[in-house]
Length: 56
Image (cartoon, rainbow, N blue to C red; front, side):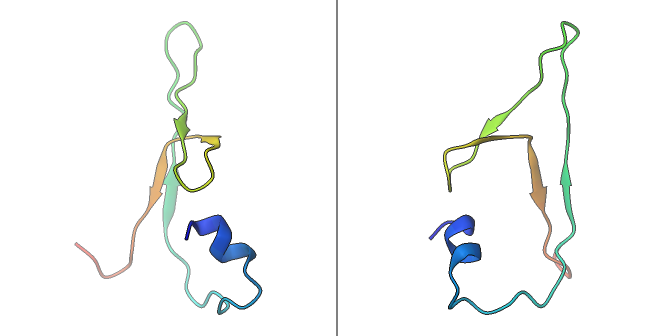
């Protein structure tokens, strides 16, 4: 199940924590922007990630 499926599932439990996240805009000298294709919904997005608290 992808993240978007989980978020849109009315039976899923409500979120109870905040996960620190970051995204980055990476631009080439000729003004092109780096994008990634998400595996959960096959859409394009800026590169980024979240980090579980307490992890190493």
